[in-house]
Picture 1 (cartoon, rainbow, N blue to C red):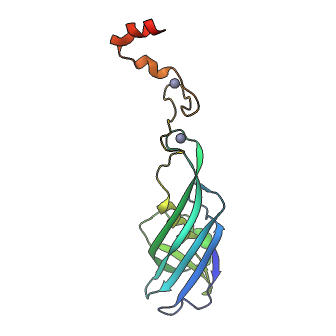
Picture 2: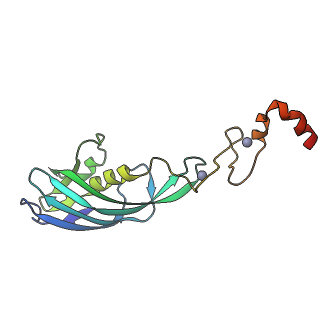
Picture 3: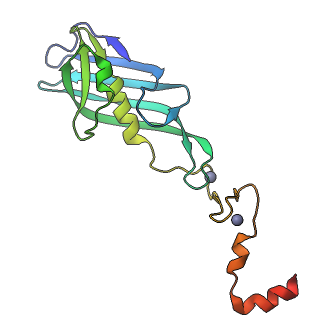
Length: 172
Ligand SMILES: [Zn+2]
Ligand SMILES: [Zn+2]
């Protein structure tokens, strides 16, 4: 996600608007379907950059109950303070471990900016911790592993109140 910004951000109050339409940066732990799209505005506010805008993405996540892969639309507005770093190797930024640090935005040769790490951190921040494949997913039987959305199993019947057991015998 590199952009040629010339010297638009070199002076205080310099601002640049970026149209985002690119595959999700690596290192988000989930797979994305299609491109991340949206807009990001960067503004030089002195010691740091302000970044704000809106991003859209489609994540593919396992269901929190039955593990079925499903697509989760993600759309959010954001406003972040970012570090401004001169660096020639943007890939070294893709493994930032301290998420409390401001997202570093590598600037290459003073004229090209790489917002991959900023976008990666924003996506990670806005991914739901848990997502269900459908409202009221029935999950997986902990005893036999059957997907209870697709089938039923007999495991639960063993937990019938013993006082009702004679009645159950009659019904079978
Ligand atoms: Zn599910
Ligand atoms: Zn079962």
